Image (cartoon, rainbow over all chains, first blue to last red; front, side, top):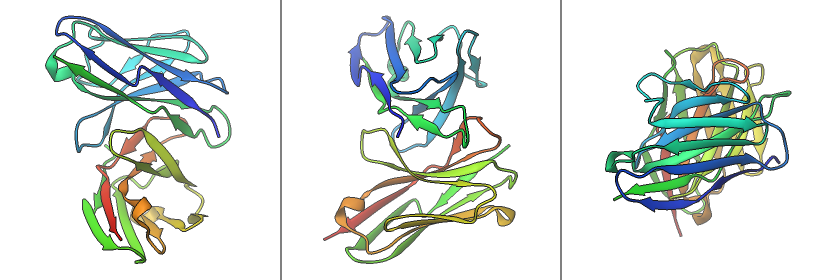
Length: 116
Length: 112
């Protein structure tokens, strides 16, 4: 099956700093990637849809200036949390869409962000 | 707006039992439905994907059914094992290639 990686798997940063999370599709090209956020014991909430070569589409309530998304190639999307605050601490998961057939999404292993 | 609900929120069973997890969705016009497994602190593992034209999919001890008209899906796990302990998430895609809408999951605990 298709493999999606995320880096880093865990990151701890100080309040006010920025953190970049990478999402890579390792064995297929993905014109579309999705970024989700998951709070403890909650479901995954879609943050934004990342399209290669164009601006990301953000869900209502997600600050685009705080969560910067770049999808510079068909295999890489990045999420940068700018000026992080403790309330940004969460589990961030990306998925890459296989643009053929079932349009199945393949999920990365997630990144645990802790802001102190 | 599509909403996905999973019942129960938590379930504890002894090893060997057969069990059913339930998922319901408010808008029956879906493209597909997926069941995932999530272990604590980990990402998602896709278990089964059912297209809107299908009624069920099977993989090993897992069987997922889909009744699109009633907005329901079930995940049947046969002969449960302690290794099945995890959170099971149901998600739907309203259209081809759109983002998935997730339920809150059912946390399963299988005791030996």
